[in-house]
Length: 462
Image (tube, rainbow, N blue to C red; front, side):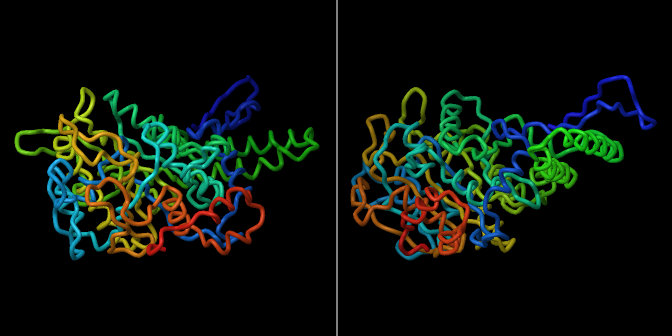
């Protein structure tokens, strides 16, 4: 927040006390203030310095709870009844390829997507699986987005927006709140620290407040001049140069606020017809009326954030843990509730970015904790299953219109070479970075660079 405080009795003709001061407060990025954020940026690589950062961004749509690989992108309608998709299937524009029956819009856009049907890992506990997915198994629990923020820099130099954000849904249901918290925990900066954790616009919205001025600009300029004078006096007592170093970042923090970077969060600037196209707030199937979904709004916000300079946006969607128990729906009810909202939100996103000429610049990744058991349980639900899971890509300059890998007839495990979270991470990073230039860049943490060098992207996509 921008805090303006007045103390003391001696004032000049402008009505300012000699002890007036301007203080830029926290942005919701742990304990990091905006000037500190800019200082951290200066220690990281930027596009102009090393030229290894591509002009691209990632939207990671994370289906918390673990979406069924069968009812999403691998229906297996020729399998036994207890295995095949309970929502049926829908033909896509790719010959011989079908999606789950709640995805008719995405089926028409399948030629703009790449679906992986041999994706797996080995973790079936929610908390551990989400951390494993979002960190690609990094031993220091550093999330993929945090690695990107460390190598690219924690904020965009022009707009001041954070490199790494998470766009969450407002949840009140205890189960969905738990899923949301797991995603936030798994998205951490690990041993890199809170400076590289994602900013959550819903987490108090302090960043949004930081992007507005609550005082007239002229008054703000007067106080800014006062701060410069106080800093000059302080520099006389600072032989280490620390205050001098901080000055430039205080200055840039002020400049960012004056440029009004918060506008990226203002959906009112969008065409109402486009907002309606994204809208997932009202869905019903027959007489069943389901809870309001914000996924469409989240995806629209993600697109705006990417346009404004954010590099890695995680979108959290809860409710995919369809056990058919006291806390969770069965597969049919659950997919009737969440399938159409995902279908509408993601198809709107893909069409929107294409209309704006951003398909090559924004990579969409869809995944979750793990998949679901091949056989329905006796209540009509599916339980945790890590041997296969959901993974799909769209855009980002990757090769679209294809299916990568195959699963066995019973949808139980890969029938081809397995694709892992490490492959997913490497594919994302190859889209975001020029790996050849990254290898020879100076001043970067070698352990992080080596992590990327040693990981192999998915063959056929990059």
